[in-house]
Amino acid sequence: MNDTPSGTPSSTPFDVAETDRLLTTTRSVRRRLDLDRPVAREVVEQALEVAVQAPTANNHQNWRWLVITEADVKERLAEMIRSSWAFHRNDMWTNAGRRRNDAQARRNYDSARALTETIARVPALVIPCVLGRPPDIAAINAQWRVRMADLAEEDPGHLVQHGETRASIFYGSIFPAIWSFQLALRSRGLGSTITCLHVPHERETGRLLGIPSGVTQVCMIPVAYTLGTGFRPADRYRAKERTYWERWGQ
Image (cartoon, rainbow, N blue to C red; front, top):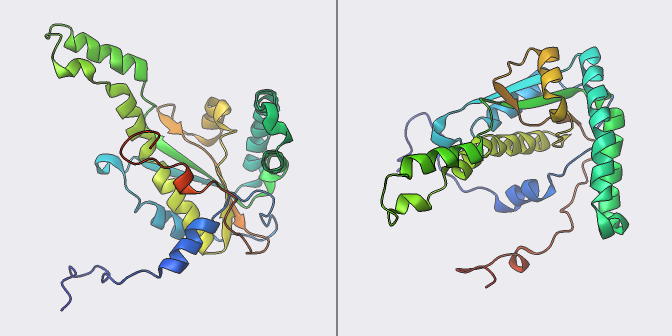
């Protein structure tokens, strides 16, 4: 007997091995993006339809997605990105210390640098946005303390910090959708990565693309087919080496 509500897919088990393969081989793709193969609009739209099924706090669904394919606009965005990279690389590498000699860190650095040089040629650039501005954690917590000022010292409200919660909700409602978008792209043979290098130029980007000042540009996702499909799990610490049970450190 099928007790699944009418019009919804039946609850059949997933192929765990295939699901895990998707999840563990969806890499940040920068140097293996096919810059010459067009990406059809409907493919991006399909992946976005998957993305908006992601969890969203209080069912706000306050995400917006801006897709840029026009060559001249991508070039102007690339100029901003290269400007940000010039500052970011110096700060990142100055503070990297011993990591500068780490082979993986070197590869990541070279990969990020390479993307700044080719990003204008990537077929599609997607900017995930959130309606509203990021919460001011300190201001929210200060307002709460004012509200609690007349209550007894033992009132549990004095122990509450709302600012951190609001910030967690704000970004926590968009990044699951971003990751779902990347997974949906990967399952269709496309690659992507998250870059934030245009964000320092948010105002200029907003003027260029008509994005209102009250909308937050979270990041940018270059989208292209990949050169080859042989992606494998990354070299990571085992989860059990970084996981505690019941108490920190256990």
